[in-house]
Image (tube, rainbow, N blue to C red; front, side, top):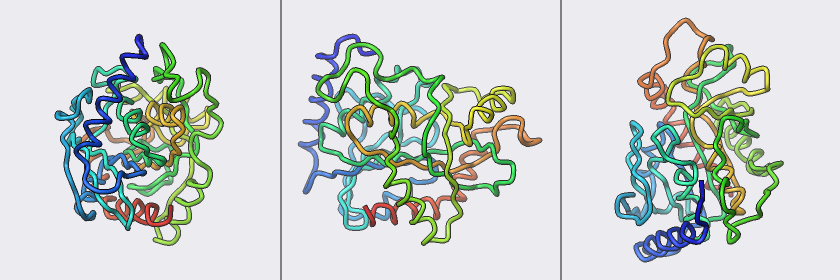
Length: 278
């Protein structure tokens, strides 16, 4: 909850100024959040610089498994990009305004495009795992909005429209990129869950009845904050497992990481093709 908008914005300015002072070359206008399996993308960039979150004023610490906690800058497919290696989750104990602090910083630095990626549980029992889904919309019923509290007038309106959070041109572009690469991809609605426990079978049935095709514990707060800040959003999920009650096995974080790593080559290729074409 944002209790003091002036203090929050001051912290955002401080972080943005620090990052700006550490960046060499042209300031990126694209930010990529590296979900599970996408860490190799940093090695595919040129002119790479690393900035640990711990050195950036106001940045929280990323504690989730596999989240390195480093802001990378580099050149990918001829475009200057930020890459967030590690994101922040509500289940780590952070308020959603803290989870999305980096989004505000990126907006102040001039980022125009935010590509969000994640690992998610799928609700299509016919899907061959691992698979991919372009996020076209989301269910945020269980999400504590990052906009609760005083409005950040310097970024957006008090009551922002949510009709087109996920940019329609980017949705089509991701679909075309996947087709060009021969990657099987679907489109669907992503449902947010607070976690850290996985959802129950009853919750999955309810979410599926509401139209969701995948479920996860990230992305939605960031997409809301980005939309409020005027940043265009694209997002896709790597479907690493079937959601609770849809298979005979037990859900585990190890399985998520294993399947995300299996899909790593395709995930990285899809991101590169998207960046090449925007």
